[in-house]
Image (cartoon, rainbow, N blue to C red):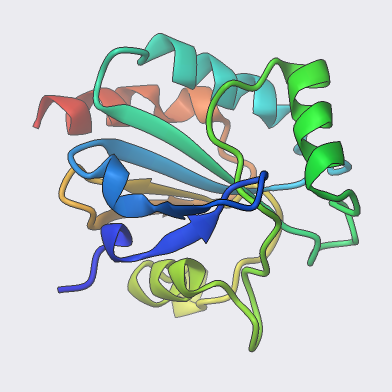
Length: 161
């Protein structure tokens, strides 16, 4: 069975990161953007990162410019924005595509195995969230309107399993 641990992605600094390094952790994978109405969710994501520090949990951010061109920056600009405006300390990866022919393989996997409303696979907007179990399987998919804090109880349950 394919899991999220079977994929890799580039970090903001351009280094390839094997997601295998997150094996045994609950993951919250989010496609993000710096100029979106949901961008303040970075604050909530950082709060989750801090709340569960030292526990088997990690937030993974994947910037994407496919929705309203709301992530136009390069890697350096994205990193500086996240750090300066939201104090982000969780991993932020290099900008990717989440839909279409050039969708990152991780997102192809996530969409296929956790479709959205009415079974649609496509990501509808920035800050769509995927909660991943410790075994790398997908627990659930959440809409951009779902606030990070609303996932805390579910994260606790998954960590305890």
